[in-house]
Image (tube, rainbow, N blue to C red; front, side, top):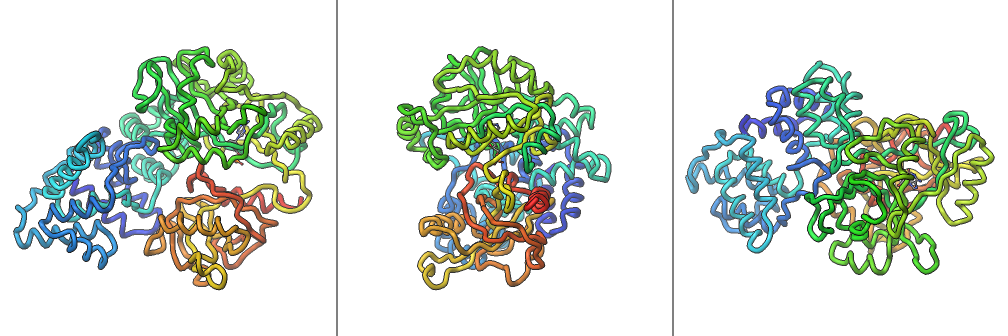
Length: 588
Ligand code: AMP
């Protein structure tokens, strides 16, 4: 397959909004690919060079791309900037200038369509992987050369990709649908594909295996060291009675309020990031599947806490006051986001990892085992030390015992408890009823039993007092199928600091047109500034009411911002199905 062919598919995908039509076009693309090509196609169509969890980025700022375009098409950087101002997208700028320069024969006519997709991919990868002294210059040169050789449409998509702005309006979920479509002309195999993908979250690897061996290839998929497993998530139930009725014998654990971290560790030399302990392979993933081992230098010291050669552990990282032994508020952990100040933050706010599950040990995937067995294996594996901590746990079938354990956690200043079916396997993603959270509000007789994690879709300019912040309200939504539906317009309950921060974050995500994934949104709701779906905020509300205005058909009453959820992406926001459950649960 040539890169020009791929670009023509991208152009087609860009022009359609219907999810089904997108699925069909993607299925077409996948049908025409070999099993080597299909993995790469999955990454590229998501605007990436590697699986979502691999932190491989181009690291080229807009300023550099302007320079690249100028050099490639022999025009001044000012001219590139002017055209950029006119059309608002550097990809289109590159396309336009390429067409023009070919007409004027400023550069040699493109060999264009000859370059294969795999070759372009290899060259893009090389550009992204350049590092060390002079790497910026080498990146620029590599890209200039590539733009010389590619056709105009390909130039457009390559530039967008390098800027991290390909955004064709679909996500990995649609890719799974398209893979099923490729083989059957329906979406029927999607659940099987999703199951495999949740166990090994590398969309390219799943696609390649499926292309080659069909469904039978998927059955061999097990947890693999270095590739994240989609973390198991909690469902909601109203009362301890309901929990026991639905799950039977359960393990009950404290619900720590920190950050979910999946730890992949092995006692051998691996491709661990720079600065990591020697002789140790280490990767840490958030629940969003971001690779964040750089955030946790503590994990370089866990060898003494483990009795294993290789493990995948599920844990919650919590800030910890070493003198009082107390767990500190969630906010403290956020200081770790600043790459340059990690060591300082690590000294100031030490972290502990409360380990509550083991997914893999010494070459063996443990996902299929019941929790009772995994708990025993974890007990044997975890010596419990200075960094990795054992999670307290009781096992019961008595709602009263459950209630007491929960009350004890609240007294200790924790969020509540997590209740887990004792004989259930580990189920990646939010499926089944194996894990349920039991938070403070669950016991209230009226009102919402939980907060909602919503996606910021845009904001309204401020009037009155808030005019100085430039933001006076914002629109939030939740995922439904492959789209997002609106559920609340929020205009109160934020501190001045929060308004400012929201504005700053939203501006980074601003787009000129309503993103395709937002579907139809009534005029009265349309924000002044649209943002692409990325920022997740936790919202509390008094209750959920029916709404003719919001596209969810439901709306939040008295919504207020609880906090920014940097640990979650739009894929982990509260779903439409969950909000419907909350709607039914309220006031029960
Ligand atoms: P929520 O984010 O409110 O849906 O709650 C689920 C989150 O609670 C998980 O993703 C973990 O980050 C966190 N958590 C804290 N303690 C535990 C525990 N003992 N077991 C599982 N998850 C826990």
